[in-house]
Each structure stands twice: as C-alpha cells, then as structure tokens.
Image (cartoon, rainbow, N blue to C red; front, side, top):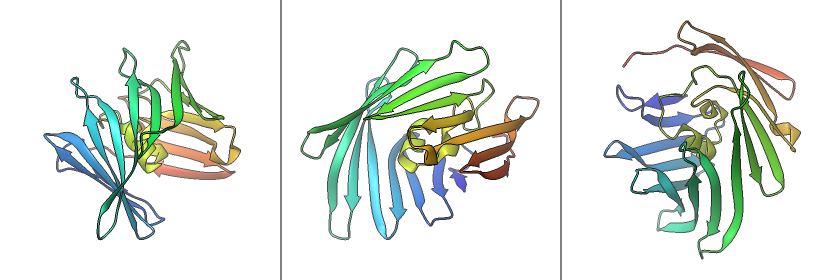
Length: 204
C-alpha cells in the first residue's frame, strides 16, 4: 500500500503484507528521512544534498529506545542526465565496503536497459518507453533501493524484466495502458507465480 502526503505526489508511507512499514518525512518539500519498521526493529536513513539539490550522500542508522547508532553511509554519483552511475558504501568508520555501478543503454527504440553491477552480481533491468507508474514521484528509484519495493522501479518508464545471477530474484512484467500511456493493469510473474494489479489515478 502506498500513501501520499495530502494532495501531492510526495510518497509518505509504504506498507506490505509482511508487516514491514516505511515512513518518509519531508523538509522544505524535499525528502528528508526514511524510517523502516520491521520485525520489531527500527532503521532510518537521512539524505544529504549537493548544491543542485541532488541526494549525494545517505547516512544509515539503527534506532533503539536509548540511542541512534550509526551503521554507515553511501555516496551517489550522477551522470549529465541526472541518472545514478555509482554508489559507494562505507562503514561507520569510513571504510569502503563495496561499490555498485549502473550503466544505461537507451539505444533500442522499443525499450530501455539498465545494467547494475553489485560486487559479483550483475542485474539487467529492461523498461518500456511509456509513462512510468511512479513517474511523478521524486527519487522513486532511491526509495525502491531503500524499501525493496520493485513497483517503485517503474519511475520514468515501466519495468519489463529484472534478471540476475540469482534466479529467485528474477521478475517479468506486462502492462495494459490508458490513452495517456500510463499503466492501468500490471501482471507480474516471479518463480512461476503470476500476480495482477489494477491501477487508478487521481488528478492533483
């Protein structure tokens, strides 16, 4: 379930059937913190922005009744198209743990492709060229990374497939669209299980 802040396109919370809940806070209309509540534990991240208001650093924390414990942080590099190209993960003691990279291929006139390399695992994402389900949600891809909600990967365009060296994470998607080229029906297939979702839109 996705909830928004009033009559805006600012995502306020995400909940799923496992009991996991995510709450997002805003400051000056910009995403400020993201809290994750799961299994009786609370984690959160706060976002640091550069002079162009792009998020270029994310601090990670564990919250207890007594204290907020730093877990580490990651930094984000962008290309000229404002797409994430590299994420460097650091420990709380500033030790580089690993690097994730993104490569983009939009040369195909029928789909877009993103190649994500994370340690030894390579994941290939393909997208349609229609309007993405979460096109108007700022930082949707980053929220997807933090929440693990694959719906949010359909930002600029809609996710068609996700294939990696770990087949259990593979996913294929198909859509029906309205006259404005936004999805109205989504079918996902993973591990031989199909799920169908209907989508409706509200004009702000």
